[in-house]
Length: 368
Image (cartoon, rainbow, N blue to C red; front, side, top):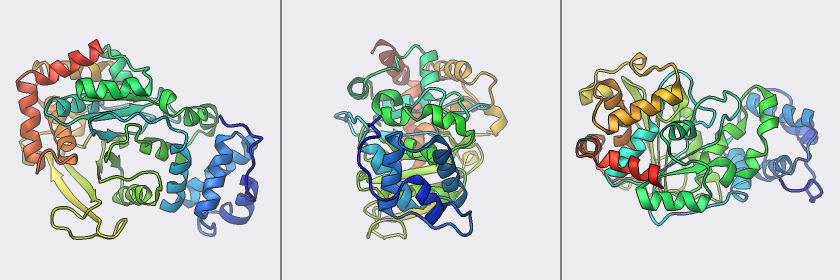
C-alpha cells in the first residue's frame, strides 16, 4: 500500500460521512468525482480508521453508487494496476471475484473454445475473495493443471502463445489485494467487488460481464464512460448464473454497448455522443438446447468444473454442459465481433470442439 503520510485534500472519510453520504438511502448526497477520488486514495493508503472505513463502505452500499463515483474509484485503482498488454486484443472477462457455489464455472471451457475459434480471451480473478470466498477462474484452472500465479507479463505471453490468458489479482492489482482483510471483516459486498472486475489488466478493447438486473449493466457501461483511464470499444453483458459470466439457460437478457454506435451508426443514451446501448433477449431453446439451471448444478464447483471442461473439450461429453459451453463461447466470439451473430459464433464454437483445436489450446495452457 501507499504510505498514510501522503498528503490529501479536505475530505477525510469521516467528514464525507457526516456532510455528504452518511445520512441514509433517501437523504444522502452523492460524492463529486474529486471527493470520490480522494476517498479511495485515502482507503488505498490505509489512512482511515477501520470503523470509519466500514461505515463509509456501508453508506456507499445503502445509497448506491453513481457511475461518476464508480468511474473515479476505477481510475484510482487503475493508476495502481500493473498492465501487461498482449499483442492480441482479447475479450476481457472479469466475472465476480468472490465466485460461485452451486453451478459449474463454464468460462474457462468457453474461453478456451473461443480462443481455438480465433477469438483471444482473458480472464482474471483472485483467490477466495470476500465476501463469498467461493470458487472462481483460478480454482478451475488450478484443477486443470494450468499455472495461475503468473506475473502480468507472463499472463500476456500466455494470451499470445495460446489465445487464452489468466491474470492473477495479487500480481496485477496488489493495492486491491491489500484490502482483503478489511473486506473480509465487512461481511457484505462493497463497491470494491464491482470495480475489481473492471480492472481490465490486458488493456482489452472489449469487456464481457454479467448482471442480475439490466440497470446494473447500464451503470457498468456508464462507469466505463466516466472512467478517464478506460477507452473501450464494446461492452457485452448478460444475466449470468450466480452473477457470474456464465449465461443462464432458458431466457436471458443481453445488453450491448458500442462506442461507435454499431454498424448503423445510431447513437443511444449511454455514454459518449454516437455510442449505442441496446438490449435484446435470447432463448437457449432457439439454438436447439434443452437446458435448465438445475442441469448445470454441481457439488464441488472447482473439481467438477475442471472435469466438465476436460470432457467437453475432448468431445467425450455432450448434452447440457457441452451446449452451455458452446453458447458461452459463442457470446465471447460475438462480443469481439468475430461473428456477426450468436448463431454464427455457435457454429464456430462447435467446430473448434469437434476438430480438436479447443483441446489443443487446453494442452498448450498446461504446457505454458
